[in-house]
Length: 222
Image 1 (cartoon, one colour):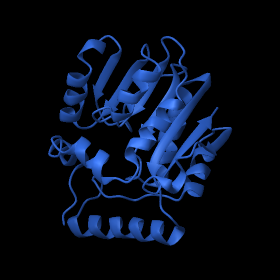
Image 2 (cartoon, rainbow, N blue to C red; image 1 turned 180 degrees about the vertical axis):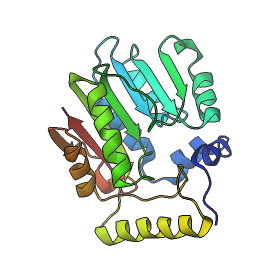
Image 3 (cartoon, rainbow, N blue to C red; image 1 turned 60 degrees about the vertical axis):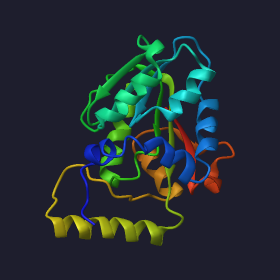
């Protein structure tokens, strides 16, 4: 099956996006609740949400911190439109940006918390390290980054999917650009990449672990 450009892939599935995640991905409801528990209730907290989609994580976070100020970035404009429709009363709290988060300028010392949920399992080590470095710079001194993502169960699984992604790209003549194919890393490799990017500590937290669809919650602190 040909690879699809990332934004097009999700735009074409906007009508089934939330149903697919909540009904077909094991434990998804649980991990959105777990993520929200990690968000401080500080009034006016500034949150950067990478790959925010329709905001399933924000639905839970707003219940924990109703005053949170969100900058949400996503490639799929139709998903962002759905997020706006769900939270029309929060227009002053939502800065939604249609952009590639690998290219968007996050700024320096801006956010209390940065977050990514089920979005980074499509990219290379080099792409992730570069992104993590920019996230690090965007955080305030006591800020932290939460990553909740699909992880490879072992190194063999990870290596296979990175190789398969390369094989398909070569067959299709895709040399650059963001295309949808899952290349999850092991939890151990994810932690290593975050530390290489400069984060002082990285830990797996909560009861999420590999109990929810082979995913994990990581918290990385400056």
